[in-house]
Length: 353
Image (cartoon, rainbow, N blue to C red; front, top):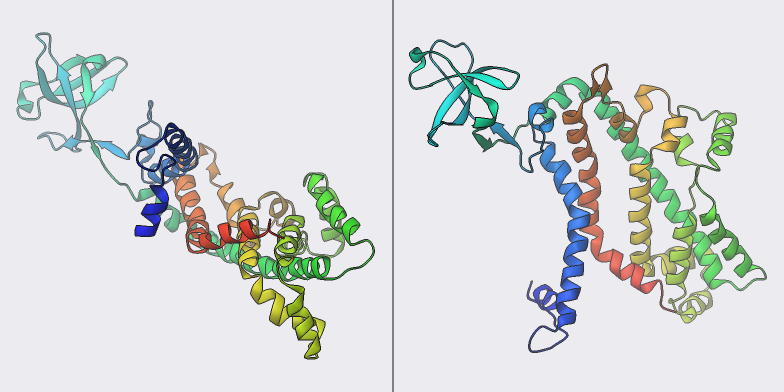
């Protein structure tokens, strides 16, 4: 903690903050707000009731209108602060509202009868109220579908990431540690695929998957894109920093090329592998388009497809959608928190030769 605080409180002006320090921290704070505010809004909104979600202007915190039990009425009535003609304010309970006028009663003296009040004079009494009905409704109505979607997404993410790490690292090992004619051309050809939009190859991928009989199979989502050009490039750049003398020493000890790759290169490339793994996990977990066209049966749907299914004849169920979005993003957030130290180390090291 002291070292972290020392890093965050570093100053260009040494003794006192320079103007560049203020500009830097303002820029960083702006970036934090731009990145975190939408996430915070989704999480807070997932704990709002349906009525609170549809209010305009929207509220930042989950809120509800205070209510009171009034004698002679079967249900609790909403409390409002009503402004009188003389400027004073009084608490009233709303019975009903018609247009721009509301019928209210005094909760302390309901026998005095109803009073018609213009709505512009009434201000609702609000309190912070964390509602879990979105989550309980989600688990009650879609628990079976969510369970299968979680399993499908986890299976695709874990298996595809493991195979991607092996494929990318093998290609990076060959491109970084072997000298052969055309190695630079092969690297440029791999990187050139980054310029091809994913939607361009979507139809050919679907045709290949269909011909292989992998429709409605999780392997039809896993197999396409097992090797990524970004992963190959990051791992190659990192493996260039591994001294060739280590490989020569292993060869002198009669180690095979596979043993050198598995026992020497891979352990030393752990930071870069962690970065590629994080990128692969994020990509596979959030993938929507390919599973949408390959997986048509509900029992093989992923979480992202399940998110798109929270609609009915009345429109989008925003409460359940926000709750599902929060639950879907939670594993990624936890994984990023535990693996974040590898990101800066791995990315920074990929640019060193």
